[in-house]
Image 1 (cartoon, rainbow, N blue to C red):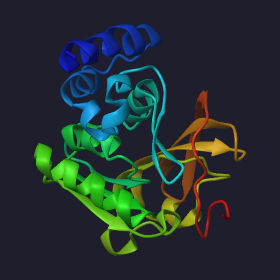
Image 2: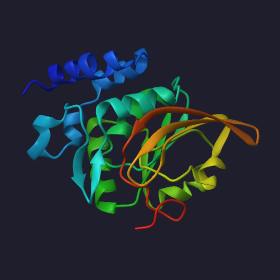
Image 3: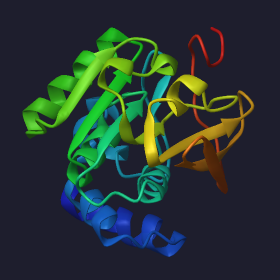
Image 4: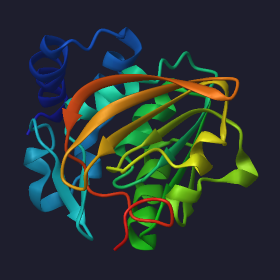
Length: 213
């Protein structure tokens, strides 16, 4: 299978027609080998317009959702980003192309280690992966210029709001356990300006300040 061609078609048929415009995001989506983050048995589906299972009830997000969330972060290249929910590591790789540093938390150790291995093999040395409760963030490494939550949450935890810098952005799927809407929060002093974007469905964010098991 010609994965480079499949990647080009993914961008041209799934992303650009739906409004992805940021050239840096488009170039990252063209570059990162999504198929390496997908189980070998279903690698032929790596560039499909859908989420795919990665084990432990988790998924690698639909390419369009990765692109739109990344675009909403408004990355210029100098940011320190916190990702809540490492999953396959694909979103972290896209972020690593566009930001200075990526700190990523995953609650399943096996998934975290597998993602870490793939990221290292491809050559992303600006991604740091931690195992733990993502809803608590990484206070020891805060503040972050950007925070992206890659699981559905009933609200954006205050713990994470406290870890984003002034002027920083948080992007998260917020809503019920089975249906959410992308929300973009921009911090201004003690307040946050909210923007609402596309409806979506993510696996639930499990943790102290998220959903319970």
